Image 1: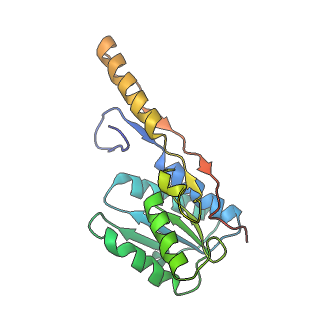
Image 2: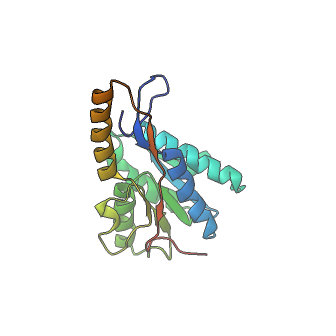
Length: 188
């Protein structure tokens, strides 16, 4: 399997440690003084659930309190409404840092907030995930987490060839995500 692991299946996998990714993004916000966090995640795939687990672990470790209102979830079907749901939640005025499931959500949210007159990171700090091209375009370059897409493809192809040649399944590959700091997080 590539990019996800189902614990119920005993099959080899090549993926990023998404728990660690959620943890690193949250920890970076906390290290920059953000204690009022909002976590936005997709729930119809395992990456989102694992990233949420990392968020929870980082909050617990740093004694950050959060409620169910501080976690916004969406699915593939509800994707079109999630930005407005986030903006409505931000109207309460208590959030300073937002950790997003991926760069697509972070980018869309940034565009929406800037369009409403907010300044990123002065009004809200935002972190994406996946280090996609979306993290590097637009008026705000997003802090994000690495996702070695090309390396995963290369390693998967090599893994398959070695397995065919030897007749033995190779070990799982788990990539450690790295935080890529850009311009979307403010120290407070």
